[in-house]
Amino acid sequence: MTGKSYRNVDVYEAAKARIRLVFTHFERVCVAFSGGKDSSVTLHLALEVAREMGRAPVHALFIDLEGQYRATIAHVAEMFGREDVRPWWICLPLNLRNASSLQEPYWCAWEPGREADWIRPMPAHPSVISDQGFFPFYRYRMEFEEFVPAFNEWLAQDVPTAFLVGIRSDESLNRYLAVKRRARVKKCAWTPPGADAAVPWSARDLAGGRAVTFFPIYDWKFADLWRYTAEHGHAYNRLYDHMHLAGVPFSQMRICQPYGDDQRKGLDLFHRLEPETWFRVVRRVAGANYAARYCRQRLLGYRGGLGLPPTFSTWRQYSRFLLQSMPPPLRMVYARRIERFIHWWAQHDYPLADWPDAGVPALENRKAQPSWRRVALSLLKQDMARSLSFGFARRDIDTLALAEERGS
Image (tube, rainbow, N blue to C red; front, side, top):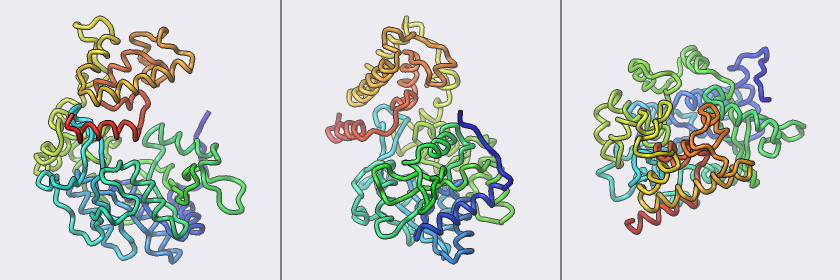
């Protein structure tokens, strides 16, 4: 069983020691910067260590997804104006999830030809990269999940390059396990030259890429972030002040694109925190206002789910109805993923014939039991079968993109 162990050193000193190790073995260090609390602390720590070791500047990558709060952009501009930061401010057309609509399951940030619809104008900061020909690896409307590793490999092509990511295991069980598992899977973790043991808070491309990613603040807690920021007087995103005043729980204070599967639950915050931007957020993609109004409700499978509508006798019947109500291209993607879901459970001694229509809620929540209720709730959430343990898939994205080009 994976467990936590504690040492006689505080997280601040431990993080600095980790970053010193990184600077010792890598000629270039780049911080993945979102403008949020975790990446801000990571960048401040990297700058602190770089100053001690005479290693400035520190590279920082910010992928601007257009749908950003003004306070976030102000903080990014502040950090990217420092002389000890080598900024990469990316404003390229990238494909992103829109969990607000079945008609438009993806949207494109900074889409050419739709400048009048953009949530905010293209930033004028000198570090902004908006030229689609700047990177040799870039492809129009490529996925965010594709761009990041491609950028990392591109930046690391000439000298060994480390990337610092502000992921904390305290934020979720999945993040905690992701770090702990790397301690056991040596082929995924990075091993310092001459050392016998791999670094558990690291990850590298299994395909043999040159870039190595590190998670130096993985053991920090929420309070540690703000204590460090306050005691050192560091700059931070003032959006968190507004979130706190608006009563947003600490666990939901995150900075990200507004229309994703998890992020849509915070869409209404634009209305509360930055009402002048709300109108443009709603206009930008299909279904945004609907998602902001209903995404936290049982209607869309949240808050414990929805009871089976009286019109249907089984969850399996309801699932078929929901699937048939989808636009054909999206229905094809969901059908393929549900088929894979069924096949996976059959391979793990749970054939379809043994499925309960509605399983044990505790087992369903832990994804330890398949059921038609799980399938129906995933369809209700419009989460691209994410709640059935599916993630990004190039094949499915291409299917929807082709349908969009054909006007389906």
